[in-house]
Every structure is written in C-alpha cells, then in structure tokens.
Picture 1 (tube, rainbow, N blue to C red):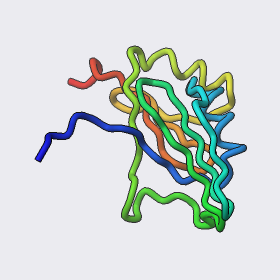
Picture 2 (cartoon, helix red, strand yellow):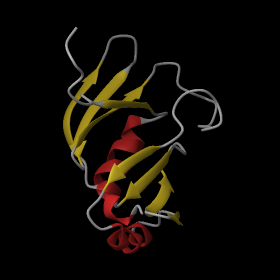
Picture 3 (cartoon, rainbow, N blue to C red):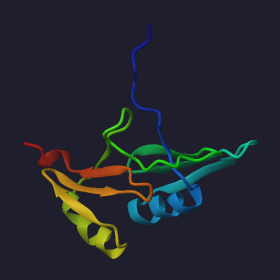
Picture 4 (cartoon, rainbow, N blue to C red):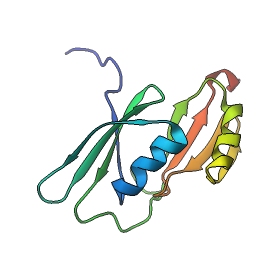
Length: 124
C-alpha cells in the first residue's frame, strides 16, 4: 500500500455556488480554476487559494437544513495564515462577522460553515 502524501482537495456542499464563489474569492482571496454544470443540475466549482484546492458543490435538490457542526460530518475548516492579525480589518471591510480564537479568527461562510484562519506560530 502506498502512503498518503497530502490532501488533494476539500469539497464543501453549498446551497448556491453563484453566491458562495464570489464570497470565497472576495473575502478569502480564492481564484476560480474551473466550473462544471453537470446534467441533472449539480454544479461544481474548483477554487485555489491559501495553499489549498477547495471545491464548492451545489446539489440539484439543495441542502435545506442549515449547517450544524454538532451533527456528524464537518465541524470546521481551518486555514493556515502567516499573520492572523491582519484578517480582522479585511473581514470588517467586507462586513463578515468574526470572533477571536486563541490562534486566529473564526468566521462563517454564506451557508454558515465555520472557517478558522489560524497562525501556526501563535499556538503555544
């Protein structure tokens, strides 16, 4: 068996890619790499940024229940940033509510998915 070499990409289900993609581009600095609108109504958008490939998926029948990190599945997604102290001003500029964490800031995307921007050096 070969060893794992890293994370290829992270896929998040969103309710509306046309709302989420601009948010991830504007607020977090991702860039759209590709978009595929599949037969049957599923849309997939691949983004690159913050050293990761992120895929946003909109399913044809949509997710109607709000995101809840207390249910099985994703709790939150943390991105490493060189200086978490620069993010509050940017988040404020775009009207994104956030809270401080011990090593950075926490925020939510348009679907309520909890994201954290953390500086590894801040972890004691």
